Length: 306
Image (cartoon, rainbow, N blue to C red; front, side):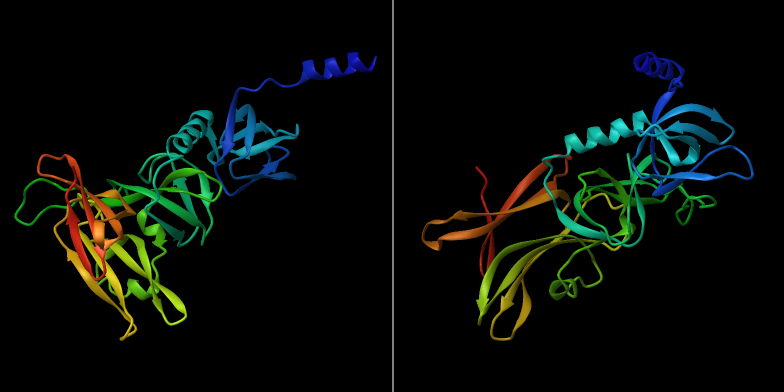
């Protein structure tokens, strides 16, 4: 008799219209669509629900534990959006990391660069992320007028920088560049000279008494969004043991730089095992070529690529 009862219950189980996912940090699950209702649960960011019905601006959903209630549709995204995030996470699994950053405040992970694109996961203020690459998108804000160059000419639409990031849960998505701060060591951040630091790397360490002090490669760009390159300057900072300060050992400008950059090491005959770094730059034809450098402190030299 018990088996017959269970089967009858399953037949009465409402059929799902589609699968959705919660895109808000939290969403209230209510028992009915009325001005007076009871809160019967709380949905969390990324949670999977079955949509049973839709009415006005609400969706009737069933949770994985079988609980049923109503939630505002604006807090849900469809399975296509979820699959797009899953696909990005797989594709970027082995992508090189160009830096780490922290979020300035709560911010969304978007499926594509742009304020109007779909988002699913949300990062809390202070969340740490790994930076993978940069892209630009039009700055679409209500009431924002297009830019008209002095003396007329073609209308220029404002653009802004977006960064593809990976969070601590291995979710991958795009965040607005101004919503994150690169984790640059304060000792070298002060030497940015008004430029924007986009990446930094430790080349090696030197002994200073009983401690080891890192020496750095820093990549910079102009202090504005929408530039046609990821970086246009490279600087190498060495530690002056006598003066107890960082000094610029190498500086290169006018680079049409493309991230990622990389740091390694190589044996150079009598010079021994030296740190190396590789920069990717776009030439006049738009082709991305690599430039490799060796660091024999405090001297930086280009290395011919075979």
